[in-house]
Image (cartoon, rainbow, N blue to C red; front, side, top):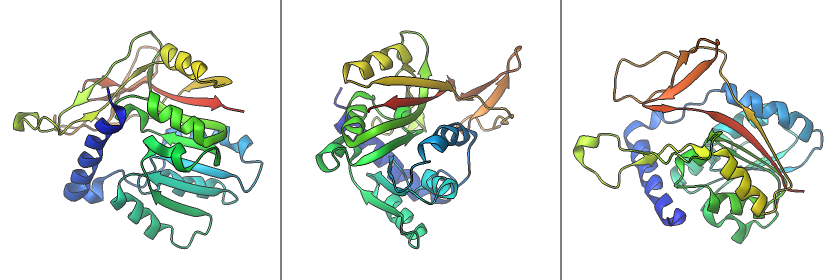
Length: 249
């Protein structure tokens, strides 16, 4: 699999989504998963004026809440969709500690070698063809720590899922991924590229999400288990979210 070339398909899908449903794309709201992330960043951010990268930042939703959390850091958002970056620049035009750039994250280290103290990749990895290329690039661009939120399975099985919206139209290249990666395999790969420490947290919701009545509307909903936990489901996919902390140095 050529992760770089296949990832361009997702770029086209995002552009089409923005054209059709710009107001509904990735609404600006704080999510429960951000609380898990911020609980770990609290200690990291005791040091001020660090360079923080939001890799695959979109229009800067996470950066908005990161800056609310701590204005004493420098935030850079990188994404390859120019429409999203332009939206971010406009939204944060008065924030001197925030900047955005259109750039291919799959080639990040070509321009940013060990440029960032901390890198965050929030809810993106599962929508990419695979993780090896981007993970290698993030490590090359980062000095200290990387935080990743993605879907993982605790067994030695990768679930590579292609989702074709409007499947009956037969558009072969109009698909997105929603992958759940083997966590043991992911850890093994991290160790092979000299990550010093790998930590993880299972991110669970403590509230209910309703199921849509529209079968074609892939909105996440929850189902309660006998143990009282909530399973997040999107279409036929169970969303097993983990927050991963990679210590580089």
